[in-house]
Image (cartoon, rainbow, N blue to C red; front, side, top):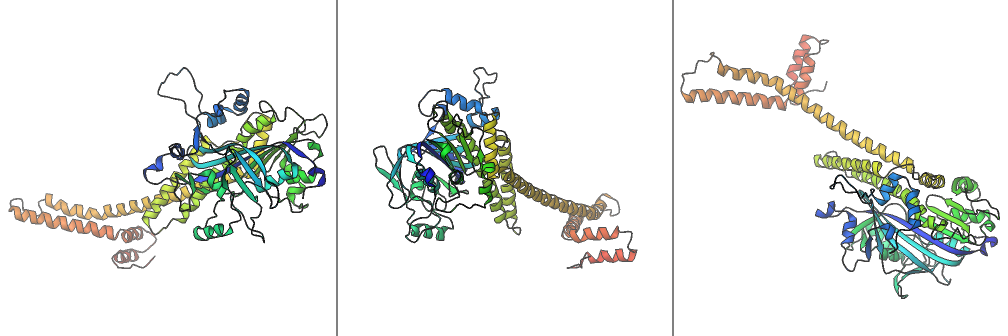
Length: 553
């Protein structure tokens, strides 16, 4: 539980950003070559998603300083990934147009607020919905649902409980009263006029039990299902423009910005609960001897801007991989400045930093799932299955190469604190080890296919060599027709044609027999060429080639 020293704190300015990675499923029929985002853009008048053509003018505002600072934070190859190629007014080649951004963003309209009841019996609190977006990526079947919330003057303990409970795709269980565990008691999406658009249904345990029993997949809570429409969960029977699957998290990765009155007054226990908010329930006792607790500061705190003094700065970054939190002084104008301060950086630079690390992990998990699925469907007794497996592995290897050269990098920015936070987040997500694992799996599959192809080619060459060798007998026989051993040049045409047909038939039979016995004849050739065996043994091996089931050597 939160200690009394912190329960009196008020979060003056609160922001939360949720990212939920999902895997986009292949499209049916001719649409398979079409990017997923193009279909969403063609959704029709009832489609609540609208594409943002330019991130820098997404809110109808001109390009200003916060956009500029966001752009120059990243290295050039990261800029090309996020924003597209450089646009030059002068070009020597009119057909060489600059490439667009690899990220395609859609924004959802119609949802203005979120009303939450965290626990049964508590009063509801309403938060503003800043943005609800879907982010797609070129060449990668991954999309991210991004939800940004804001509020002011919230109790510190309520915010901590919110961070732990909100952002779960489905309940992991139910208590004795039938209420979902670890999730909010009730969540409602509201329109601009206050109308309820969708309500959570975590208490409907029959729905989740029956769905999982029938489809071997967890269902999605109603309020999250509503946000993603017209996207539908892949195992469901519902129809939609696109279908998706959960990749890893039911607990969505989260970011939070907390401006409190006196951050230096937060004791260590509550720093621990904030930093481990994605995994540590607020009601449980602190696991004192857990390594995450004992080494919390060294593992999860970035304290370059934390001096714990009255003069400051007193901004602390907490990063566990699944959660990224920024806590600072509400009385510091620079901390919650939307244009130039930490809040502006949180909403721009740090959001992209966090997104990229989770995009790396989600993409690698999708590659790993593809490999596992291809191996699962492989039947080595069926040639069609082997060919299908080969095509899937080669396609996955090509996609992985594109991912490596287009999206994978270890350095994000030349600014030391941004780069340090990027490495810290990637480290806790184990992205490097996951990348190596996927790379080795693909290499093993590729080597297996190459060796299998070489084995088949070697077998074919051996058989062709045997057939060619024994076909020389037929070649010599047909040469009789061009010699004077059989003087039938003046014979009737029927006689000459008979000789020709008989010779051709005998030659064809010899070639067919050589093909049928090519495997045994290959062994006979090896036996005859073995100088260490006696002549009698080698000649005896010649007879074994014509046995129906020759003994194995």
